[in-house]
Figure 1: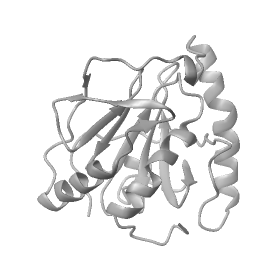
Figure 2: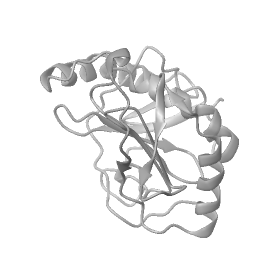
Figure 3: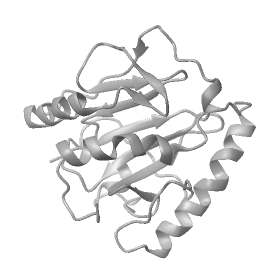
Figure 4: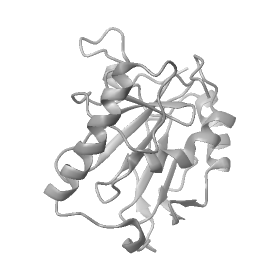
Length: 204
């Protein structure tokens, strides 16, 4: 079950991948093209934004991260998000978890600049069958048995990934400073599989 209200994300042209990203359910050519595109497109965006930082050089911030809460989701969604929150890792790529403001089971953050997770977000435009931009597999990658759709946020702003084929939508925003978004979402694969049921078999 998903919450389809709220701001709509725009699907970007097919362009994503990371060496740590595994192929989707059938190893489709579309997935392969997406992975190749991400491998080259994201580093280019990082250079353009002047943010070519190594992960080991990024210092985690002490201040809470301000995160916009998703619009109030259904109680069943809140329950799954609470379960997911309890399973989230204390570190992502060696970056410690940070507090979020407002404090909520719907949000989490790691590192500085902050990798931000939001649970119970609206369905992206690319996943809405009634929308002319509907293309659920156009910009999609598979990571350790979890499928994600993604969009680039603009020069130097990073990428936003949203789960595919799950009962609720979980969104992860990865700043451009992190050159491997596939490596980031690897940290969430097992918690997602344990707490957010899949609506189709993603091979994980």
